[in-house]
Length: 94
Image 1 (cartoon, one colour):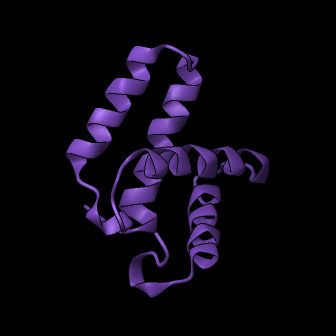
Image 2 (tube, one colour):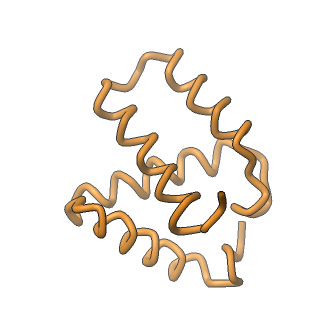
Image 3 (cartoon, helix red, strand yellow):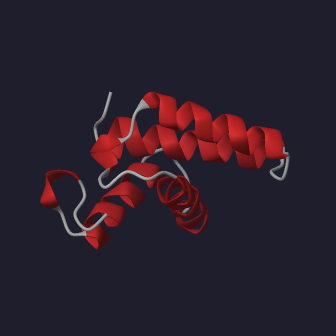
């Protein structure tokens, strides 16, 4: 993916993402899991940039993960929340 929205270096983007996550009252320790969940999604889809992702990509991913049944309910909710923060706040994609 190289550069993220606004041509920020990757580490700066994830630093900003963590700020967005912690602004929701998520602890720093749990924020790492949000990054992990968001990265899992991003690596699972063949887009060059975060901006290129579509809501259909997110829906398909969540559908597949939900069908696998490997996540506890709270983990799936964490995944959904991590992606909401990723696209709505951090990347500002509506």
